[in-house]
Length: 215
Image (cartoon, rainbow, N blue to C red):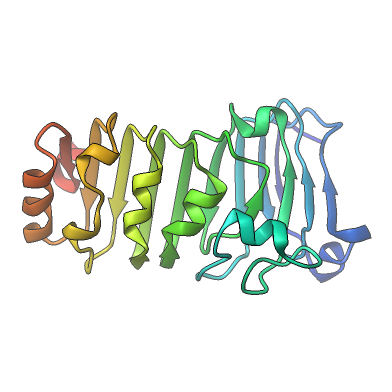
């Protein structure tokens, strides 16, 4: 298999042996995967960029505790959980999600996450799967974010990007004390009034608007 591979599973592929996708013996550096029907995913140590797609927007599960207690690999609300085996629990892996956030277990050390094409995203799902994030980029189409206060659990977060969330309420973002190392907040497709509120709430954080980002 080549260094970069796009894998779009059809129905038959998704129904493979126990929903297993094993790339552990490859030397892939990039993988673009339709997550539909995948119950267990084994990644090679060489992988640096993972893209997952194929999951519709919505809440994947309630908490890691609920996942552990779930039956037959189902999340708290009956959403299938994908168990991922990655070197160092994904410490050197950059993850991109297109569409809804799947329930991923095993990537607790991932530090960079990009979620694109969001219609609705429950940030509890992000925090549960990726508690060690330092960089988080969220792009709506336009989109709607729920459980925004959950970002307070990402205490290592340094860079946060929010694009395309016209109904974002600045008051739902955590108090700056809960994000002690946040240095940059990039905003695009956010109402001017909300941007002004965030500038006031985060005086020590560099706020970059879409126009500034473009330059």
